[in-house]
Length: 477
Image: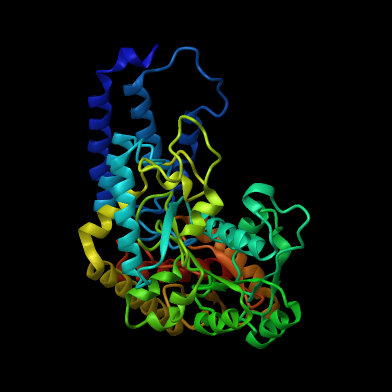
């Protein structure tokens, strides 16, 4: 098969194949294992051992192969029994909008390249700000992930810090400046460290102030360190710790940061959604005092990858940090044809605003609140089932949507439990009926299933516990 121009007529047939496959596949998710190890041999059909063909097979044959392999061998993470990492599903409105985004294939860089994408992003950002109850003065940008949201936020913090040293970092970089102080509690996430690494500060530049092995922030020690520094600094607060869903006291950290003239960044990758329910809104009290906030949309908002966002108290800082040097063919910052390429790390950008706009328009504030509260209830159900099972042990309170627990078979010595739970975690992923991985919490190996998928029901929570208990019995026997 040669030039795709010769296959113009194939578009309708291959899209119809995708559509005809999508319905039965999505309807089957509740009954499918999350991972089917029997499908692994199919991956060889993707051509790992084959050179790039001189002559292609044509769109029909290739799409048929991709759908056959993909629907069998994919990790069915959009289904209701995927509890590993913190991955949401995709709501019907968001999925349809994402297909539309691919069909329209807009470059969301500038209004000149797509007025549709620019306008949709503007509305989506405003609606997100309103969803979380942030002040009207906050502005933001859509980015690819929580890592990029942290990167965007901490880049603006870096430029703010440079100003206080009389430096224009956008023009001259970091050369000749001292190290930027970055302080946090023990919940600081690897994505924030990666952002600092990419920004040239170093992933190990974070000074951690924790008062216990779990990582709860030591406010007094952090306060004393800021007093000692007597220089501008950045404080990272963590809204939703990944092992048990705990929160730093954002309001207390905001008070400390304001007193010392520090920049406060809040990493709210999934925990920011606590703001949607009256039951959990207290967990993010003080968020409106942050200088920057990072969050993921492909977690609890349930839109497709890749989708995150950053909000700034002073949104003009986005342009200062990410504006591009002039190019004759590109609109500049003052042009009415400019756009979000000048407000974030990516220039050419997919129209990721369409799924966000669609899910917010389709389900509104109350629909998303109801989803969050249903997940809060499911997390409490899981905690209750764990507490009732004699061979399971819960290790933490459940403030949000993560339940941290481990297996503790009768008669097993404490020294053996970490190894046993590591093997249990591997067995759980290999088994594939449900998906949940291990972590280390307070020095102990544990499972930490996260509940953020719109499809998840009580039956799925019960299935998770049944599978964990079944595998525990097998391994302990």
